[in-house]
Image (cartoon, rainbow, N blue to C red; front, top):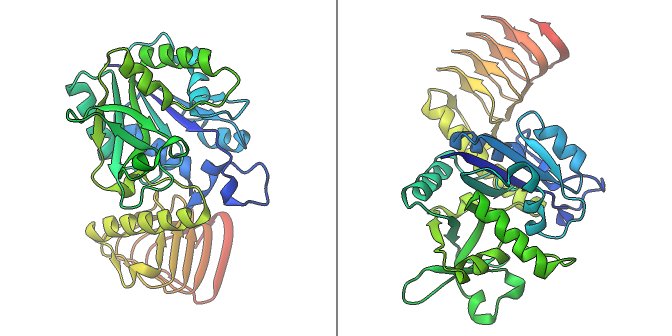
Length: 342
């Protein structure tokens, strides 16, 4: 089955309260990597034949981040996710297969979860799959409406449109969907005829599809943390904490020692060899590569560095620097240089 991916990344992110009026929400970084690039990394596992990113507000910044890995289309008027998805029609409308639609502010979704979702879609020979999870506090999320007693999904209700009973439903929309590609654009165009000139969201076509006799399959993500959306800087800080913990645990399980993981900040693309010890208050970012048996820290900042083996680096700030083997660097050293060698 051919697979395609659409990333919805046109939103303004008003609640981020940036002084830069053109700062797109999905370009905010976590540990040095933009939100949208976490999503793109995750999507690699489904091996999409084509990925399309819809940009809008602050679109030039977003385009620059993704254009080497995704096609880019523009949503000129920010009028909901329905219009955003329609911007991909020219590129995808005649394709046969499944299209995964995902919001660009979902940095916590795991690759293995997307793989499981895709597998279930293929196994059930679905036409539409809605991805959901259960939250103790569902405020701010769309609710999954299920028919009783069959428990089949019949609609997704945005919170602003939900009645008091529906607002009590703990099952929420993740903002991730899988559609038969041609079905997606057929129903987006049907919705457009009734909503022309008005905002409409992709969730509105789900009830239309059900009314026409199609069954909506569903996948419930066990860990609700994975569907977490970034809408303000509090959300951003929380997601950073989660990602930092994942990275540190992965490295420790691979043979890296951390005296104090809570004060250790390591970017997602950093590689560190076995038996290296990371001491407190250390930050390692970019595409830094560290060999085996090093002692890094305390109070060290490394960015885009290459470090050999059996070095000791303490109280140092190094950027774009190469450190050989068996070197002692620091204390109180600052080197910022393209390819500077120690």
